[in-house]
Image (cartoon, rainbow, N blue to C red; front, side, top):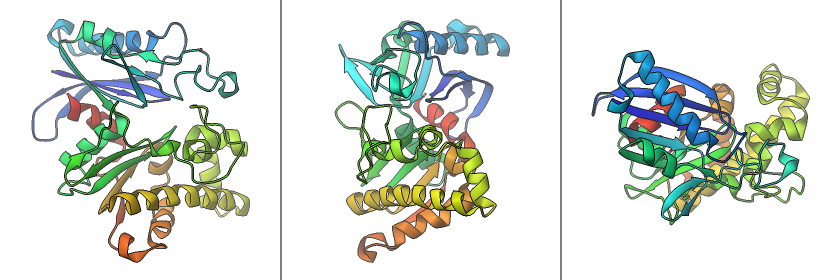
Length: 308
């Protein structure tokens, strides 16, 4: 059995997986809100406890589970050769009190405490992990020039060009959510940027900017509310511009998309986002297709499986 751990800005999900090349069987899945209080090892302590509790639930000896895959929202920093999490939706010390997070962490310890519990730990950015899962079992299978994009609490991207998954010096390649695509001067991102993609359109930014939670805003837009539609059209313009930039820079064939904001509104959003890709420079964009994640709302779980 392998421990599969999905760390997001809102929740942590843990399950155990069995099986090999075919789509593995996930067992004992449990979720909790992401730990954000106490000392900066709180998240790692939470993960270890959840894995051990899941083992007990399934009648598995926790000591026998020594292989862990961790799919985590980033970015990461490397400290003494070990990965620490510098997630702007988890570490309140990055942007300061204005973001309202209940801690002053600039990083959360991850690899060191997990390495003391597990014999083998592989940690990857959640979108890199989701990209691997989508290429192995989902909508990106057979594609060598592709990306996975999440539109959720934050914005993240996993990239593959010429069959090679891009990682970068600290495993942070693909943090397109922190690109600037406008001159906005009041959309504060958790990383401290003002006006980057995540600050403009991420799920946790929508309520801050527009005074309405994302599910309510999109429900109103789908119902034809003119004011909500205007806001959603602007969100799609920003996200569509981001997707176009990825296609233009990397010459992509296909983008698979998931995340709670997109997934719960996918039929409404997909044609709007595709239109923004198709509207520019056909030599680069013709045939570049945006599709829903083939692993649906389980993509985060299978992302961790792909690592383990």
